[in-house]
Structure formats: structure tokens, C-alpha cells
Image (tube, rainbow, N blue to C red; front, side, top):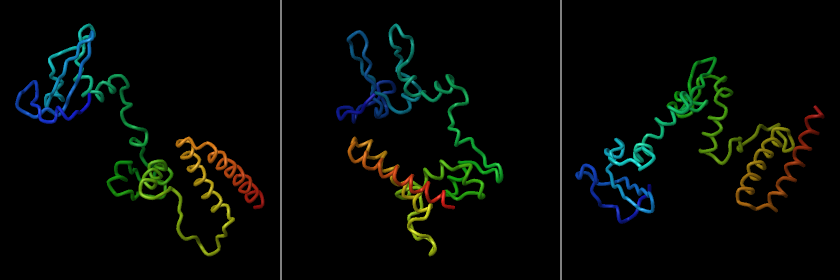
Length: 189
């Protein structure tokens, strides 16, 4: 399925009334057949054509993927975060989303940890606090080192994704050094 400029103002092959917004190219035995459907006909899977020898309707497969997945893996359609409930206040992930990320109680932070970190990372550069610190906090405190370590880990992932392996090796070495420093600081306590 794809969209091409030549299909922009076609009528639906099925109903001949609405503008075709779904364009399907079916290849079988070296022959190509095009279907141009409106949203309504495509959603209904009404190409009136099945793939020869296979016996299924291509449009039906394409537009009912969720239903097919539910039949294959019943009850697996929702992610675990979607079904989680806070044990203290009974809030759900959906309720937190509706309240613009506000949680019901302190236990929600642990229950929905991944969801909250994901939301924070979408709004700001990272999931760690980068603003002001208390007056007594030193630059070499464990909290500051952990924050720097998390930033370096994310930087390492980005460098690897961009295939900048030399810079990634330097970053990896900085991470190892920082881990050693952090272990020493925590051992002193």
C-alpha cells in the first residue's frame, strides 16, 4: 500500500462516489492489479477480490490487523503499562495521561516508573533533573555522579546509533571511570 501523486483525485473503485484515499497494488503471477478505495470501503474490506490460491482478502488483512492480532494473541493487545494499577490509590496509566502526567500518590512514581520517565523525556532533554541543586550539594556528590552517568549512557547509545564508534569508545571509557568514582564515593559512606 502506498500513496502516489497520480492517485490524488481518483474515485473509489467500489462505490464510485467518494474520493479514493487507499491505494492497493496486488501482484500475482507477474500481473499487477490496482485497487483504489475510499476509507469506508477500505475499512469494510470490500475489494471483492481475494488473492488467488491464498483465499484471503488483502484489504481485510491490511485494515483489520488489530482484530487478527487479537485472535492470534488474545488479551495481549494492551501493553503491561496500560493494565497496571497503583496498589495504593488505584490510579491507572490512562488516568495519569488524562491528568497531564499528575499522579495520584507517591506510590504511582514506582508503579508507573517507565511511563513517567518516557513522558519526561518527551518534554525535556532527559529524565533526570538538570536544574538547581541544594546549597549543600557538591559537584562530586553521588547524586551528581549518577546524573552524569545517566547522561553519558544516553550519549553512548546515541553515538552507537550514529555509528560514531571512536567517540563511543571514549564515552564508554568515561562511563567506566565515572562508575569507579561512584563506587569509591559510596564505599566511603
